[in-house]
Length: 140
Length: 404
Image 1 (cartoon, one colour):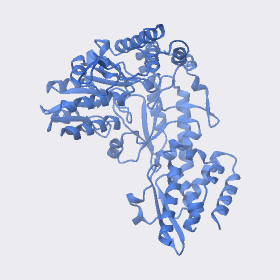
Image 2 (tube, one colour):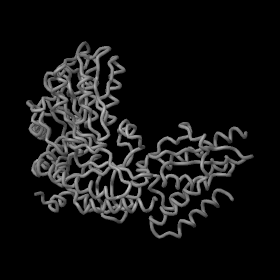
Image 3 (tube, chains in turn green, cyan):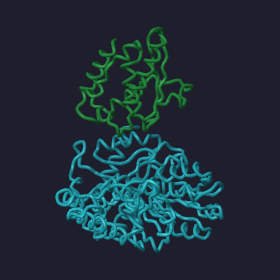
Image 4 (cartoon, chains in turn blue, cyan):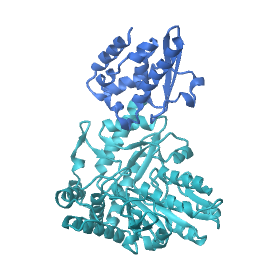
């Protein structure tokens, strides 16, 4: 599936919920399905700066596609990174670089984009895209 | 007895909703809310007498200058400083601390020692580290116990004739501990060291008496005591303020300028370069009037009741641990729930209309001491109610149920 299709699918899933509690509960559920980062990659180098909670992300190439694994010490954050990885993992680096992230707003997680959330979500998206840029360079 | 309903009427913001729920504002240690009386003064200033001070001969400038200087006298009276020129208007506590830290650059030499408490806010650690780097002085830490109380016997051992400066907060922002500052000051003076007390957290709860404490420097921010942001004060003993060089150069702080030499203005202007936060300074004075009208004894008694009730109710939640259990503490509760991240709890509390702080509270060394990433911190003001405590406790219980 293309990134856009996955994003639409996530938006569809979230549209079933009437209130924030259900959305949060679903996000917490999604966090549990996060492809976990190998413990050996849980290093300070792989921590995303700018989050109130710790988020580790690792990326590696599988053929011409980039595969992400991650973890966080906070449950809601884990849900957020799980959503991002579901959209971006197993995709070509160039597609990740080109992807837009408006779907975050559509699934009602806009408040996590605000600067007081210690730039968490913004930093995560930036980090995933930076990995994509690095690997795209390698592929070229 | 405080008439809380009447007091709450003074704070327009307390009527608003957040995420469809009535706001329960429990982040008072970060900033307090502003009563209508202070808002009115800010509006009145810009409506009627906005002008630069200490400069113009015209009526508006004179009026603004008078009101600004009256505010300084109110602050002097409130903190019982000997002279009004010992009160320096600053942009807040951080600015106040930096004036002193910068000033001591010329007064310290290699091998001198600076003592700082283990429960400081970053703003009371970093300036001293920078000072130590500039001068070759050594920064030493007064440790604390698991309750969040300073180990005074270690403090005694650390004090020596090498000690030139001691820095400590009056109340810890992360733990709520009220430190024994009178003892800290008196002991430091025995070895000839100067003491700066960071009063940012204490000023909203305790009326500190500069002459009785015999403190050398004391710093506070208006926005934590019902005043506006961007204004605060530094109290300094006259002899010390005369010894310290100016912090910033600019207008207002000079007596005479030629290209060869500048002579500095007298106190307090020597430390007040540039156009200050005039409106903020005047509003600071009115905020003090407001709090004094309610009365600090009544405030302390009421807040203590809230603290005891909230502590008792929160501890009923299984797995909840409170950090900072000093015998002598103010209305701040820092807590975690076993197995849960403070950020998760805070995010859900926000959804329920409850405003708390999560994170390390700019006091990472304290979090490292307890081996935790941060805490959830609820901090109470005199306008908070027991009903709001109940809402907090219900919200925490709900967050726990969702996250487990």
